Image (cartoon, rainbow, N blue to C red; front, top):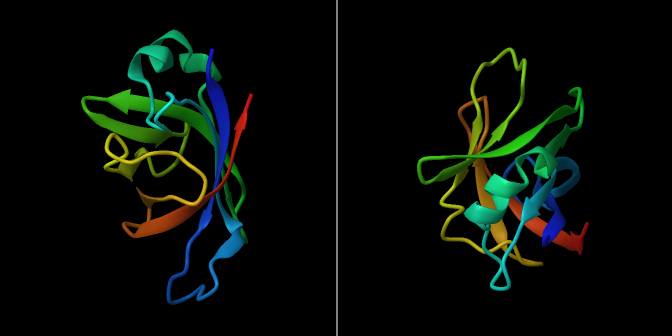
Length: 121
């Protein structure tokens, strides 16, 4: 079962010109040999596909990687905001070291994250 632990850290942006190791996500996800998320493997391993959001000054969030329609999302059970965090065009992007992905946060902002590690689980 090709599950990988992927760490995303906030990329450079105006409030964090050097990026930030204190803001990001760690997720466990099924990744194919080309670096794309594998929907079939996700369906077989939903419970193992987790996400941990860490953000300096806020409590951590723990949830699951979900796939709805053609979009991937981070879902946090019991989240007061009540909405999932969509991952921008993740079906097209690859989860490889050094690549970037964007997440639409609860605050309505889209933040870019750099993939800083990809390790087999």
